[in-house]
Amino acid sequence: MKYVIVTGGVLSGLGKGITASSIGILLKAAGLRLTSIKIDPYLNCDAGTMSPFEHGEVFVLDDGGEVDLDLGNYERFLDIALGRDNNITTGKVYANVIEKERRGDYLGKTVQVVPHITNEIQDWIVRVANVCSDGSGETPDACIIELGGTVGDIESAPFIEALRQFQFRVGQNNVCFVHVSLVPVMGPVGEQKTKPTQHTVKELRGLGIIPDILVCRSAKPLEADTRAKLAAFCHVDEEAVVSAHDVSNLYQIPSSFYEQSVLRKVSQQLGFEVPDELPFLDEWQRMADKIDTLSEEVHIAMVGKYTGLSDSYLSVIKALQHSALAVDRKLVIDWIESTDLDPNENSEKQDEAWELLKAADGILVPGGFGIRGIEGKIAAAHYARTNNVPYLGVCLGLQTATIEFCRNVLGLENANSTEFDENTPTPAVIFMPEISKTHMGGTMRLGTKPTPFLVDDCKIRRLYGGADHVDERHRHRYEVNPELIEQIEAAGLVYVGKDETGLRCEIMELNDHPYFVGTQYHPEFKSRPNRPSPPFLGLLKAAVGLPI
Image (tube, rainbow, N blue to C red):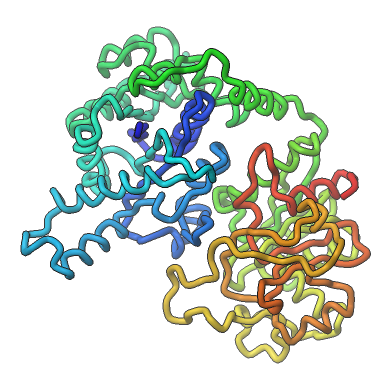
């Protein structure tokens, strides 16, 4: 097993996840089977209870793991399927060690960070790295590990020490350390400053880890003298100083790294052969170049609650981009805060929000929790339904479309979700009976579940290739009220897919509409650059007038 370990310095948000994913593309192009691990030093057991404003999107895996959004990058770039154990957190590690201590597994020893916590981390890495993630059933050849946070953070200290020990446990010729740092550009002449990187590498080396490759984030390509200076003061080969400068789109980064000999450097460190021909990388580059050539725009109105932070909808954005690429359009997302569409609010941006919505080629209402902005989402669904505008509702977007239909088509004026009004006389959406009301973490309906189609033909089934059922990932506590389904469907809003019991509504489609679809599951989590999510592809096809 070969390991590529990616750390970061100076500040967070430099793109360690994209760096790890891009190196993964190079290794995959060289013929290696891959898996990946993300280490998050926070005390939470998982990302499930974190606010989107604080942590960004919660990415959901097949096994129901609620994890860091970087695992979504790994899955999309490398076309793999990871599990909850591919995300290691301080909370998980300490919980395991404490449980072992309570069982007496340590035979009376004093339990300490070293060796018990550090050993638990190493054992976890070895165990998970050997689990197949590409569906082949074969053991991976390499594991890419990203350490979240910044070197020097007190939270990261046990993981840094564990990784220091780990290189000797598995052999230094089986580990390649990649350190991502910042090279700021200062002054009127745009001088590239190396001191921040020098300091972070000095700190990392002081902790016992010597980077083999430096990935230097900067607005423009590294200059020759900057590269030479970094090599001299950070004790790495000059060719191991990699420029991670701004590019036209993220999919250009793997080729940029390849041109800077990153694959050759990693192969030399880890001892594997690089083929003369890399068809996978060539195909990837053609896709990246195609994105840059698209000029005809398609506008999708994103009606959400966390529009101030796009990371909150990262997988939705990627799914839209994948689908726009498939229909040869340049994607433009018109962000609309749902509260600005609420007719009961006196928002200063209300007129602007409605103009954006009405000008859009398609409307997307993504998932979310809580009452804020709900009436705006309902208003967006009403506009799309009554004006034949292509609409996709994901999770909460399905529920708000159902509420709107009950109110305005069935005449149930007080229809609502019990999430927003526990005492509503007409509950169109209800709390799922098996869900805990006392514990938040990991208690939703989570992970991949089968959804059989109940109709012979409909738009969404055609998009899935006529499949008998779909396997998609879920994350919800509320569902459409089964007692209203017959009445709703009789009026034309048909739940064409339900769970295996036939009671829980999973996919809705409106009759006699260009594209009015909702999914209770989150199809965005399985979208890939070369294999867009079918519901999102349907939205984009309808938005540009292509047949479905």
